[in-house]
Image 1: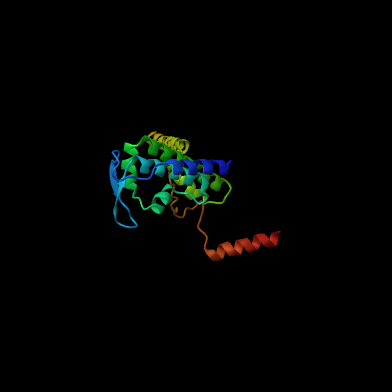
Image 2 (image 1 turned 90 degrees about the vertical axis):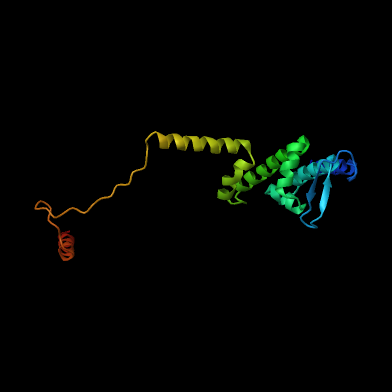
Length: 184
C-alpha cells in the first residue's frame, strides 16, 4: 500500500505544470532562505508543495515535526501561514500532514521509541483529540482551584517541655533503649 501511495503522489507531482512566473494565477512571493532570492508563488507551486508535504508526512519515517519539511524547503512559517489563508488545498494538506505526524509521534511514544513526556506535552498541536483532552484537564484544574479545594501544608512546631512528658536528652534515650533491649 505504501508504494501505491508513493507512486500515486509522484505521478500527481509530475502532472503538476512547471511554475510559470508570468502565469495569471501568481498571488505571492517569498524569500528562499537558502539563496535569499525572491521566488514567485502561484497556484501550481502551492499545489506541488501541498502534494509533496502529504507525501513527506506519510512516507518519511523521520518526519516528527512539521517544521522539518519547511526547513528542508527553505520556506519560513510566516509564508506558509499566509498561503494557507489563500489556498484551501494547502490548508487541508497541512492538517493532513499534522495528523500523519501526530499518529507517528503517538505510536512512537506508546512503543517507547520516543520520549513520552515530550511527545505528550506537544500532542495537542498535532491531534484535535489530544487538544480537547488538554483543554478539559485545564478546565478541571481551574474549577478545582476556584472551588476552594486547595493543598495545605501542615507545619509541626516543637512543643515546650511539660511535666507530663518530660524531654529526654540523647544519652537518656540511648540508656533507655539499651535497658529495653536487655530485658528482651
